[in-house]
Every structure is written in C-alpha cells, then in structure tokens.
Length: 309
Ligand code: PMV
Image (cartoon, rainbow, N blue to C red; front, side, top):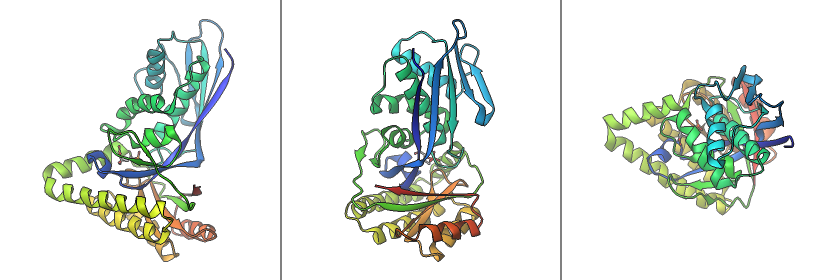
C-alpha cells in the first residue's frame, strides 16, 4: 500500500445555527484557509493501526484505544469497508482551532476517514464520508443536526435542512468574510444542551425564535443567490439578535461583533455553537484588512480572512 494524504476544510455557519437542530434551514460554507490533514503510511507487519495527533498530544493504537472520536472514525471506516485493521501510521495535523465553532472535530474525522478509504483502495464519495463523520459527530455534539459533517465533507456552500440531502448554495458574487476568534473555547455539546433545556422549559418562546431564524435563512439564501450583500449583512446581524435571545452569545463575542459593525462591516454574528468561539463579519472586498485590524484591536485572539465563491 502506498502512502496517501487527504484533507478537509474548516467551516462557518453563515446563518441558522441552533435553530437547525430543530428542523429549520441553515447556511454553511467551507473555510479553505483552515484545513485538517491526515497522512497515512504503511508500518511494519504486526504494528496495527496507530493514530498520531501530536498537535493535541495524542497517540493511540487502535487495538487498545477507548472509544473517542479518532478511534471511532477509524473503526467505522474499517467496519464500513469490511476491511481488516491495516499495519499503518496515521499522522493528523490541523490548523482549525478546537472547540471554536469552526468544525475542527468533523474536519479531523473527515480527513482521517477520507485518507484511510484511499489507503485501502476504496475512496469514499462525499455522501458516504458525510454519513460516517455524522456518526462521530454524535460523540462531540450529542444531538448534531448534521450540518458540520455535510459542509466539511462536500467542501462547498450548502443550504441544509436536518435529515435532507444538502442543496448547493450558489454564490455568484464572492462573499468576503473575516472570522474573529474570542480565544475562549466553548464545546458545542454544552451550548446545544443549554438551548435544549431552555426550549424544554419554554417551548413556545424558543419555537418562535427558531422559526424567526428560519425566515432569516430563507431570505439570506435569496440575497446570496442575487448578490445582495447589504441585505445579507443586515440578515446576519438580525440572526445575532435572535442568538443573543437564545442565550448563546457572550460578552467577548458581543465586543468583537460591535467592533466589526463599528468598523463598517455589512453584518456580524457569532458562528457555530456560541458561548465563546468565533464570530464572523461580512465586508466589502478591499475592506477586509481594515476589519481584521479592528477585530485584533478589540481583542480577537486570531483573525482569518476568507472568500467564499
Ligand atoms: O460545531 P459548531 O460549534 O459549529 O456548531 C454546530 C451548529 C449547531 O447548530 C450549534 C449544532 C448543530 O449540530 O447543528
């Protein structure tokens, strides 16, 4: 068997996080500047499958590993292909910040599964890969909607409704976005769980919030497909107001969002689970550097500029 490498991008949710768990639509796009990569090479006979993620201080041998995301991914791939455990070393690297709403868990699993399928001579199509990664997402998220594995495995902008095949989101006029990291990791499982508890206490209020998010997503899809970026920005900022009412914003997110809007962004909101993690801002081409500088000045731990087309 020959050495192989495979990658998967990070992602941002443009609109619709949390409400998407309850059946509303959402829009997500890959962030190609951030990638998880898996490299596999053959190892001496009898070594079994070893997964090395030295970035996060993890090295495990499949035969001995407890069930966690990486070993589960490898086991799901081997089960799916009905392949015996190969003698191989998988090295994982990722530039996607962990627990920050950028899909790092799904991207690492997708890169690993994609590389292992290729290594075994049975590359996965996007839909199969997405299905496998969805199983792993349940460990991270508890009740994932499936949006992360979908956008990351297909690697293109998507309009997503839970339980349905993704629809391609056309982006005729490139979207210039700046992603600002609060530097405060926030596991998605916790914010998703908090929203679920709040919804159980007060379903009428939360169902109404989710429905309003869904309406914004429908309008945003139209705005993107017609190239109306001013309209899209306003819809993003309205989505942020609803996320704040759901209780998933944070003072650090609010500070970065306020700084982005003050610097002239067309719209800004948290992206992903919230409670910390990342925010995104939409801007005019040519104004991304100034916006990035404003976010750094407001305390962003990391800023990534990305263009979606
Ligand atoms: O993985 P994150 O933090 O980008 O969150 C995913 C989006 C949620 O809607 C909050 C959860 C889900 O499963 O859709």
